[in-house]
Amino acid sequence: MLKDDAENSKPTDAAEKPEKTGGLPKPDDIQDLAEGGDEVEYEPIKDIEAAAEKAEHEAPRPHEGDDKSLKHKLKKKEAEIKSLKKEKEEIKDKYLRKLAEMENLRKRFERERAEYEQYALNDFLRELLVVLDNFERALQSRQEPDGKSFQEGVEMIYRQYLDLLKKKGVVPIEINDKKFDPTLHQAVLTEESEAVDEPEVAEEMQRGYLLHGRLLRPALVKVIVPKKKEEE
Image 1 (cartoon, one colour):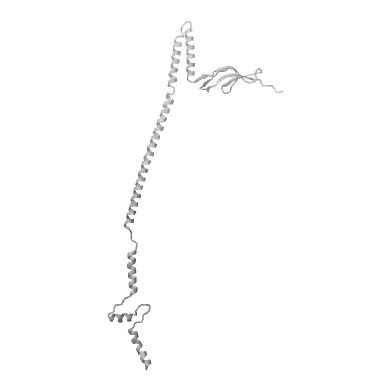
Image 2 (cartoon, rainbow, N blue to C red; image 1 turned 90 degrees about the horizontal axis):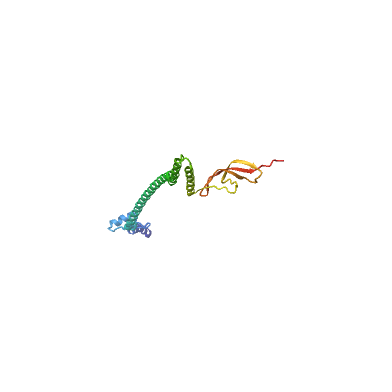
């Protein structure tokens, strides 16, 4: 009898106190509690909502100061690019100007050089015309009976001409010791002789000249060379 009462009493206790499973009420328990007028609080859902709200508030948002800093950097870079473009155009313009100046300078140099080569002998030719004038005067006096004036005129022109050449740095090559020098003399005739041991200048056939110490024209000479000995 006691056993039956105990078995009959078990469902009543289960209905009065809902059994918890994993911390969540069973559907029947939720319905019974709702019908009794009590609120059902589902704590895990509240925690999830609170966490979502917290995450929404704590989510990183673009800072207004960072946005202004980025705009400032972009403006600065744009200004730098604009400045570099302007500097590039200025350098290009300077380069083209210098190139044009160099071309104009080259053309002017070529023109001046051509003019110099064309008129470099102006002073010399002007002095040479004085010698030509004296030649004409001498030729006019050659018809005189004694011919003395003509000879004197020619001698004067000769001295004047030598003075003019000397003034320009042209001097004759002097042959004093008769030693043959191939750097100054050009042998046009040779003659063998037993009287010499080395080549000697026997006769000057055309005078040579130096220009400021440098050979302008070699002297044409006749040279005596040692006679070759016959082989025994």
